Image 1 (cartoon, helix red, strand yellow):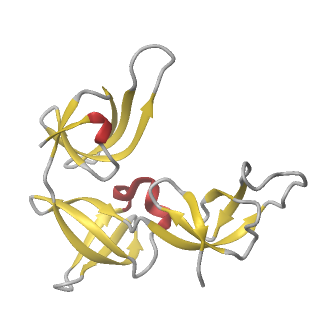
Image 2 (image 1 turned 120 degrees about the vertical axis):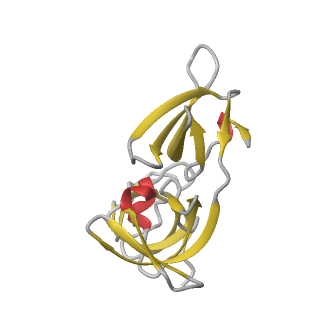
Amino acid sequence: MKIQANTIRPGMVIEHESRQWSVIKIQIITPGKGGAFIQVDMRDVKSGNKTNQRWRTQDTVEKLNVEEKEFTYLFEADGMLTLMDKESYEQISVPKEILGDAAPFLQENMEVTADFIEGVPVAVHLPPQVTLTVVEADPVVKGQTAASSYKPAKLDNGVRVMVPPFIESGTRIVVRTEDSTYVERAKN
């Protein structure tokens, strides 16, 4: 199915130069002069090689149809993630790199979705949001207004995010897994 390049999202599987690629990360770039373009970091499904490609936003690419299956994440060993099929209880192993930037948000017993092409896992998707605990937060600078300023904070999984001034160490917050951004304070 042909789609416009500006609709490419991480986790999609596309065909480019007669090869199948799993999209890891996208960035839309708007230069000062000329039209916008999209830069896509992607991994070859068969060889695992990474590359990046640029398309103009109006270009079209071939999106591949994938079979989705629900899994439960069990554990990691030697850079491989072990997932268990929720229906058959069968276990599969996939490389950790398949998650891209979302890897730090993976938690034991988390429900994930895996995409398959011809029986081969090509992408793993985490839930859109996870709840984590802030372990380090900078103090509020006097005179900062809550509306315009965020401060850096470190989460229990080691990821740094920008949070509103009222968030302190020990607070549980909801974070978007796609781009590591603060959503809200967790409801306990």
